[in-house]
Image (cartoon, rainbow over all chains, first blue to last red; front, side, top):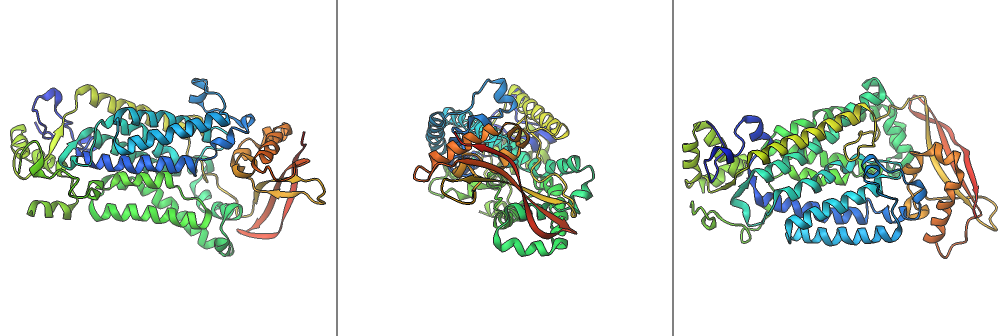
Length: 300
Length: 191
């Protein structure tokens, strides 16, 4: 029997043993989850104050509320201005606690629920942006890890590995399924790639510096084909390691930087989730991390 | 030190490294031996069968919902809805439409174009465009846009009329032809 090494060799408690489960629930340092948690919870604060900060204004336009399925199922009413302000305060307080690792499970679930409600109120007024998919999923899987500290560099966890893998898959599906959606919505994927989507986007919301590109439709069509190709190939990121993985992460971040500069579309909620692919435990200063000599195994 | 250097170079997780070692060895005994050796100073928290089971079932259900969301072309299952942003093909010889909002203020000859965003009228352009037919059929919905404008701009005069408009630019081989045309979609006398 092959298997992931564990503190116990009891089969019922052994970590995943088959190749798929070892990939789906890899054991990673808990410190990686602790650092990723800081990224996500700090970003959620930034998100509710800026990117999805329209919820308080939605309190003034309740007539436009178009509740999504889950909001209808849970009978969540349109938000009021006061309700939005209370929800905002709750998200910020819970996120600060969760980022600091205080009452980790409780604060994590509190963020997941309050941020989920906030998402219903930012996305439930007609237009639904898909750049928040991975971030919302990250908010819900992070509390399942349990206690994770920066000093847990030498403590590996399949729970953390699963949570990070779910975020990775969510990130990749954001791109891969958008290709599927282009195919479905356009009937023929070449119609999308040879069409005027970027022209349309530039005319509607393009930055002034990017307007000259409207005189070069051929270049914009080439950019559409390139977008299709790398969105289609995005699942490769799930199987890369080392510098190739870093290169893919950097490539997608640069792509989003370009779309931000040209169109004002930053996709930051997805961009931040690319951090789930990185060995973030390396960011933990040595003095905060548990060295092998400090571990309970006394291995070194 | 050599081990650490090798890990840094290969960017492998320490735990994954030991897992790979154990897999190669093929026995739990060797895995345990590796685990307690100097080369694998990691502690692995075990997962129970129940923990493994729900961690497979829940994502599988979510994946099915997300996939259905694409084929049903619905955003209703957010965050597992369709990924429709910029998914619709646009004709190189078609038109580019953009919805706009204007307000007629007292004492001004012409309606003034307002920013179509939450900071100006309480809602984003995309939200209104997503329910455009409803707003055209019920122009009284624009009253809340006027109310939001007044609340957000307490030192500005109250608009008399809200005008929902659309600019249309004709394309020819992907290039804009002529000036954009503006049409009025709906008007509302502000109460």
